[in-house]
Amino acid sequence: MTAARVGIGGPVGSGKTALIEVMLAKLAKAGIDTAVITNDLVTDEDAERLRKGGLLAADRVRAVQAGACPHTVIREDPTLNMAAADRLESDFPGLDLILIESGGDNLASTFSPDLVDFWMFVIDVAGGDDIPRKKGPGILQANLLVINKADLAPHVGVDFPKMLAEAVQVRGGGAVLPTICRKGDGVDEVIAHLRREVLFK
Image 1 (cartoon, rainbow, N blue to C red):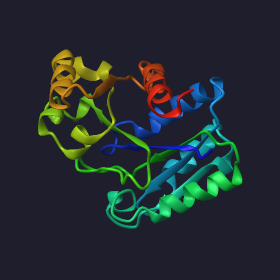
Image 2: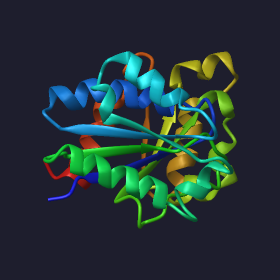
Image 3: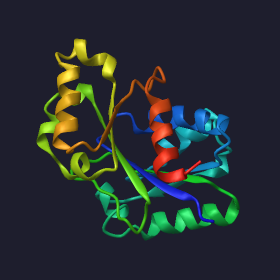
Image 4: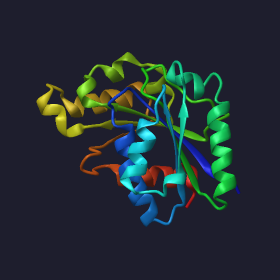
């Protein structure tokens, strides 16, 4: 049985890596065997952050350097990521889940169905309450939309309940979950959603 491959996309600074960091501890506690692939333009910075965090063995975190527009290697030509995922499955038989983090991108970022079984898109309150209304492909097409940094709403002039309601509306009822990753709030719900929709365990 192959590992489920879950993509995580979203703008720079929205909290993709922070979400993964919190998820890793909770996934390990749940007995879900996990590995991670990060994508950066020309560095391994996100991969190194996860390795130094010690939540996974270093060789379970692989880095892909896009070298160009970040969504190229998750959509137009995902072969580098596919090869990295294949190597992880070969190196760690019995792997349940591979999280594939895109480099920071805009609202047009989407994942190729050849690469992932499911993908989520992460935005944050500090980016503005108009993001859901802009209806980019990431907002509309992701299997799950995560709105991070909900606690910052009062500090950036955002009506968070309204932003959340607009996100649900533009997605036509598609899944939307709020989080505060630095506190771990809402991450249990993200994992429960993945277990129900992708992992089936």
